[in-house]
Image (tube, rainbow, N blue to C red):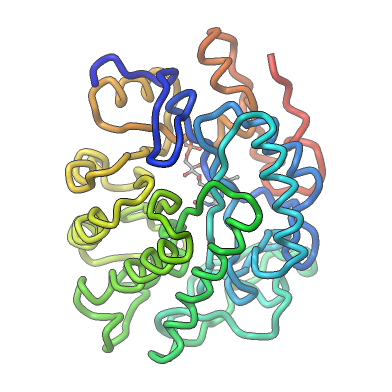
Length: 353
Ligand SMILES: Cc1cc2nc3c(=O)[nH]c(=O)nc-3n(C[C@H](O)[C@H](O)[C@H](O)COP(=O)(O)O)c2cc1C
């Protein structure tokens, strides 16, 4: 393992990767109304096809799962058709691309949605904070309703159907967004999950939703090689808190290790030794993300601490990041002001060198 670096070819169960670089899932808020990804996204993702694996922006598996302005979904045919153009463009350049499923749960505003249904969550716990709406600027999060026990299989089936849709759209696989305080993490965390049934209380019960969603996605994909997961232990984002994140995430990772997933993608947040803690508990490929640069990425790979490194902000402004690393070319600094603004600026207009 000692000679592995960011530019060493790798392998995820289903395919070879030209390097150890993943593009992080990043919401860019350029989709059309109704959750349809834009034509600009074809160029954006194709420009970044030289990474080992592209993870798309968070994409809603259902209308109820969509919470942010101008974000995409994958439950309607016109959405699937638009995604097909994106996967074709990435494949034409020899790249691989997984779709990230982002069911926001309680992190939503009615103004951003195309359904009249209220947001759903494990429990009626409103998130503190606000989100952007194009109509009225920043708005408080809506209060969610709690999912009834007999509704949970239906929510899990939405992930299964979305998996079938993603494969029909040409994706190489799908990633369950179980991080950043969205629905799966709301089930995992004691601050947001106050249930007293089989999906709440003990850690075994709190991880049940995530395990069942992964199992349903694997069954729908027909292969565990096409399913990954992202976690962010102890991330306070979106007002998510947990009494004992180390217990929660060590239990979760042990439970999902036997599923033979394509990879475990872990974002380092407030637990400094996240990777050291979790990697030994997971037998498949391990992708580490959060604040990496060339030196830090190479150091973690060389130490055997991860198999892949996930780059977020640097990928926004350096579409040819593997080439820049290989050639030693200067990196372009990202532009946070255009992360979520419509149009080409800060999206498809960064140069390759
Ligand atoms: C503009 C922007 C949008 C993001 N959207 C998502 C998202 O949709 N899904 C997700 O899992 N993480 C999202 N993230 C987090 C990134 O995937 C990544 O974990 C984070 O940026 C840390 O990596 P970095 O330090 O290399 O940027 C987003 C980050 C940024 C900067």
